[in-house]
Length: 253
Image (spheres, rainbow, N blue to C red):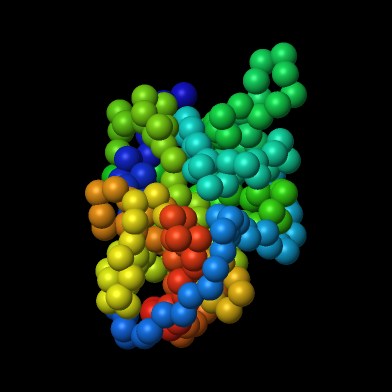
């Protein structure tokens, strides 16, 4: 059977296509409270989606196939289990399905990797709409990344080099994504950030993004939104002083 390979355009498009940048601030004054212990700020990725009714495609119906290795990004790796599923859709048709790889002679998942055979009848030059969907059973959450690409021969995906799509950019729970420059927002409010300190974005009491202040400056935090127009509050933990600074309404989703 002749093999064809998905273009690496899929990798760059899925990683970069969903991200936008916004670091506008209204310069609002901050409030502060004492907090001696570092806060446990983290995003809750749990959802309530039902397990998809996906089934393995019939390989006899297709002329071509390719091997696709997908690795799960670090944010979601703690939640990977053997009951997870990874599906590849082409123009809305399921072309590949896999569970996490299993270590030989062991019933444990290996490196949060999914190895699948993806089928096709395409000529190798026609454009296709690719949708990679990951169902995390523990979180009850379907993550989806999509892009229009063209097939290209003699190129592999995830075999010779790591392919780690950022599924958090395709969250069903948080469909809106913005990236903000934390140091810029803090400086506008009159706060001088320190390397290693923590910052987090909140909508109400819900954490929507978190990160550490970088030594090189230009710390970026990805903020995940449920809907357009949400007002985001920025919190900053100063470890040396044991204080949490809060700046309200710094970003609109």
